[in-house]
Image 1 (cartoon, helix red, strand yellow):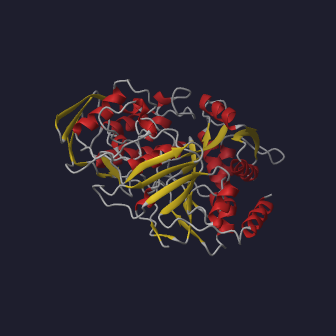
Image 2: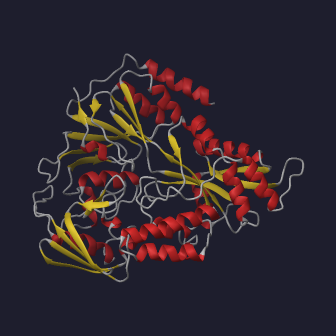
Image 3: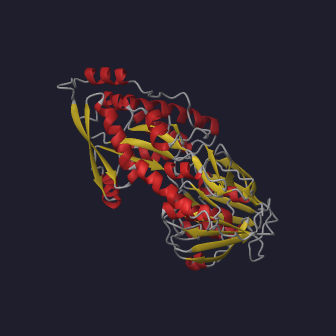
Length: 505
C-alpha cells in the first residue's frame, strides 16, 4: 500500500509538469488544512486560529527559541510578590485602525475573559486573576487569588492577544490587532488574506501579502505546490509525499527539529499495566529508531520527556529506555509473566482510523510480539476513540501533544492526582505524592531556577514510573517553492517564518 501511494502521487505530479501557474509577485500563497474557527484571540483555541492570531495580534510577552519569555508589548515587568504582576507597556504601539494601544486595552482584554461576559474556552486559564488595574496609560497591574507561575506563559504569543477596548463577541468578523500583519478578508473553507502592517512598531515583514488557502486533501496540497499555485505548507504532508516532492526542481524541503510530541499511554488501573515492571518492559521493547526510519522517513527525533528538548525545563538526563528486548524480558519474568508457547499475556491498543496511527500500531504489535506480548489492535472512528480515551476506557493508546507541551505546567494537567479523567487530562490515572508536591512547587514558585529543579526531579520520577512511553518529537517539515526564501522555522512549528520570508520573482 505504501509503495502504491508513493507511485500514485508521483504520477499525479508528473502529469502536471506542463500546467504550472504564474504566481502573484506580491502574494505568498500558503496551504492550510482548515479555516480558523475564530480570529478573536480571546476565543480561538484551534491551531489555525492561534497561529494566524500570532501574526495579527501582540501579546504582553513573547516566547524565544528556548520557550523563555521576553518583552513584547510589555517592555519590562516586575513581580514584587507571587500575587502581584506589574507590566510597563511600550508607548509606540498602534492598532491597525490607528488607535494607540494603552493599558485600557489590556485591562479590557483580560476583564472580558475573567468576568464571564465573553464565552470563551480560554477563560478558565485566567481564573487565578482576581482583578486588573490600569493606573495610567502605560501600566497594568494584575492581582492574583493564588500564586500561579505559568501566568506569564498564558500572556504570551500563541496564548494571548490584546484587542481594542470595547471589542465584543462579534470582533472575529473583522479583527483589529496591533501585530505585524493585518486582516483583509476571510471566506470560510476557502481562504484568508492578511497584509503587511506598514506601521508596525517592531521589525516589519518583508512580504506584502499572505493568502492562506484551505486545502484539506494531502494529494491536492502536493499538486498545488507542484503547479506553483501555492507556495508553502508546513507539517501537513506525509513522509511518502515529501519524498516524492524532493525530486521536484521547483520545490524545496526544509526540515528542522520540532516540539510536537508523540507518546504511548497506559491505563494504570488495568490489572496488568498497574505493574511498573510491565510498563518499563514495553518501553524497552519499542525500537523507536526503527519506526522513525522506516515509517517517518527519519523526520522525527526520539523523545525523553513530554517537554521538548528546546525547553528550559526539559531534563536531558532523566531515565530513558533504549531498545533492549533482553531487559524487557527480564522485567516481565520478574513480574511473574512467564512465556507459554512464546506468549505471556494479551493487551489491547485502541487507535483511530487514521492511516498513520494504524501503521504505528501494527509496528508496535510486531515489536511487542518479540517479548511475548500479544497486542490486539482495536480501531474506531476518531470521535469514538477519543471519547473512550477521555473516559479512561482503554488499556493502551497513542496520541500527540501539539503546542500544549511547551510549558511545564502541562505536568499538572496530565500527571497530577487531582487531574483524573474525565474532568481533566490525567487519562492514565497516574498518582504519585512526590510528583503532586513537585507540581505545586513548580506552579507556585516564581524563580525559574527553583522551578527548573522541581521539574527536573519530576521528570526523573515520571520516567521511572512510565505512565507514558516517550516516543518522539516530530520534525517541522516546511515544503515550499524555490521563489520563497529567508525562511526561519521555530521549534513550535507556527507561522512566524512568514515574518522573515521573501519572494524572489
